[in-house]
Length: 416
Image (cartoon, rainbow, N blue to C red; front, top):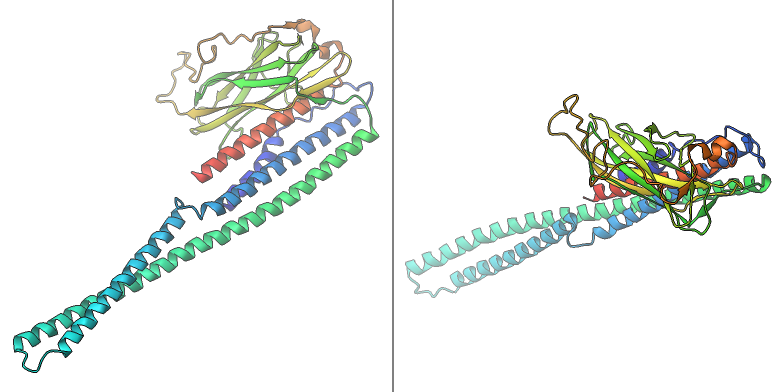
């Protein structure tokens, strides 16, 4: 349980350590490059601290659940203790019955009349001997069952003590994480107060989703759709995003390789950890834009579970910007191929390199968008100083969602 708690607390930090610095390539009009970089770093520090705190809350709840589970009939230790107590009680009753039978035999022998025959005397003596044997056996059994019961109860009590200690450790970790979160928030607030300027905000009208294959074969790849939807009433000038792929093993990103494309950028390319990715076009109210995320799984990847996480953001020509309130994710299984793929066969496993699950084309849709690859704000310079901040927020919520998925998966695995 200590290992599970440690994993729950440290996993979000491991995930969030992959968040890019998103340093500006051009100084903004309201803040210098160094000022923006400092604020971005503080934002990410808050995101890390929040994820660590959330994980500590999960760890505390898991420890409490473990303690409560020890008092449920279906818990192995509780069931073993109950069965041992029941067996000990039954053995004790059997011993009492055997002792009563022995007393009765002895009494019958003692009360034989003076004129009892030798046959009657022999039978009475034999009854006492048999009862003595049965009583001795019953006593030994009762003592053994009582010992077993005591051991089972001790094991249950020891587990309760261990669970209580885990709760205390988790609560201490939560207390520490809470202090670190408060400190990170204060540092960010102080920096923003000292360096006022255009700040990106969480925008509940920006909604994202990730869908794709349920399984990908090791050595192959699968294509996921990351959809960004504008539910607001104002056109957004440029949509951006950030994504990562992780497996649930200890090596979170060792075996997975992520690339992206879109209708405005059809060539597959790696997710830039400084620039994320962009639609290079505007998004009208009520419309959506699709990015494609291709996860290539290393042939040496172990079978298990994986997750793709993504966050969306936008920036406008007037400098306003924002990111989706929640990160999106899609979980998938990593399966081993029955036979090694042959060169030149084009086999990809999962949903393939060229089509998504269901046989649909992997060409992203741009319904409701305007502009072209030449219309990017980064290219024109408008809003280039705020896009990194927006993408930093998108990265934080995406990786925060990924952290929670990994924590939940590992929690489920520990409980299995």
